[in-house]
Amino acid sequence: MMRLVAPFLALFLIALPLAAKDRMHAHGDWALAGYDAVAYFVAGEARPGMPDQALRWHGQVWHFETRANRATFEANPAAFQPQYGGYSVVSVSENAPAAGDPRIFAIHEGRLYLLQSTAERDAFLRDPEAVIDRAAQVWRRLSGQ
Image (cartoon, helix red, strand yellow):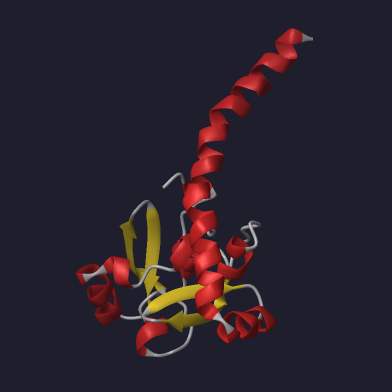
């Protein structure tokens, strides 16, 4: 019996650090599930990126609709990244992080926030500062910062 359990236990122990790392990026290695981070700001909407306009930044692949959007991102990537690793700001504020839907978003004070539904976005927009304050407290604890 121990011979059968040992390999599975080893795989589980190896996977633990990977799982913890993945939790910090809601969409895994593919930032924003392939949507163009710059388009949220310049077009005001979620637009799919193109595979031939991709780059790697902070362990994720970022896709862009145009070469110009890619260049804009390269000049200041931190300005375009979603807050809370792409998790819904409301879910983080409630201490239950869940991936935000890249098609449902809000930009508040120059920062991109993903949400899970339009109802959640409406709730966020009613009092964004309160939600962001709660989310920041939870995120610091979750991310060890």
